[in-house]
Length: 208
Image: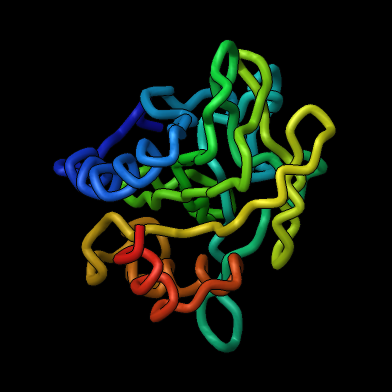
């Protein structure tokens, strides 16, 4: 497993998205917090397709499983009691964080074992009606699609909206699965899990 694989140009794509989002937040006196921005992958359990050990409380990526069914590819949450955590954030001494950015990573089956597919990634953005407050390593939990009843330190966050931004070439294919799986197919599956259509996501991206 690569320690922290980042496709060429991926950070540039994120930067362009943030260049649209940050000024809107700043105009209202808010800012964003990022989860797992430079955190390498470690303590991953290939049998469950989820984190293990001490990293369970501070997940460096927001994971989802890609599973093939009779109708195509489906995105699912990992079968784990902590699959509701979307990331951890530095909220210490910050009273104006009203947007949470997460690195979303797919997990696929390779020769019977779950493996993170680090060549692909999405940006998840959660917009809040008021700032979230917490610690320097605050986990955000409560994700249960299609609902986003997220919590921070036991308090409901009630997100205004949640968006999934595609970052990679739509036509690129996953090299570790036997049947061709394109990034576009994976994106559609992920957005279906989140309850966001492609058209709505394009519109909301332009608004941000």
